[in-house]
View 1 (cartoon, rainbow, N blue to C red):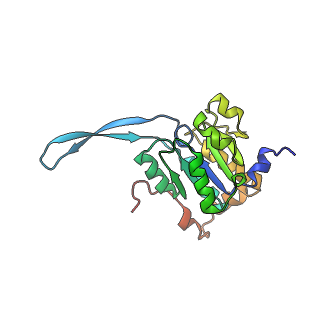
View 2: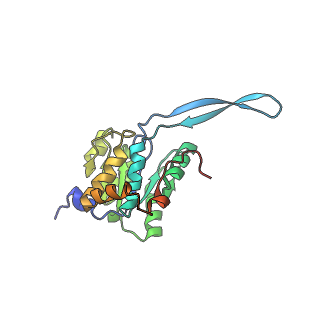
View 3: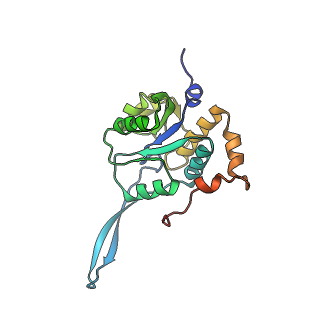
Length: 205
C-alpha cells in the first residue's frame, strides 16, 4: 500500500531542518565589523549574518506542544546558526555536515528511533540522501526542482518566509492535534510554556 504524505506525517517524532534556503531565504551577508584593540588600534572582523522568520520560531513551540523534538543539519558553520539554535532550544544541532545522513544516524541511535519517525525539510541536492530515506521528506517552495520531485510534501511558503512553520503545521494537522497545540500556545494556565518558549535573542545566559 502506498502511504500518503499525511500517513507519513502521523508517524513523525523528530523534525529536522536544513538552514540556508529553508529557515532563511538563502541569503548570506558577510559584514565587516570594526573592533577596537586595547592599544587603540582598530581592526576589522568579518561577521556572517542571516535572517530568520518569527513564524518558524512560533512553529517550534507548536511542535514541542505536540510532543516532538527538532533539530538542524547544515553544511555551513556559523555562529548565527548556533545562536538561533540556542534561542529556539533545538535538541539537535549539527553544523559542518557535508554528508547529512551521518548526523541522522547519530540522532536515530541517541533517540532509539527509526527513519520512518524522522521528517526532514530541505531545498537542495545535498538534502536528497536524507529525504530519500526518511519518513516524511518536505521540500520548501523555493527548493530546486529535483528536490521537489522527490518530496512527499512541498510547503506553500518559501524558505525564510514561514516554510518551517508550514512543515510543522502539516505534521500536526495530520496527527489531528494542530488546533489543540494552537490553543495550548495561547493558554495562560499552561505551565509547560515557560520551559519551552523562545525569543530571548542574544540574551542567552
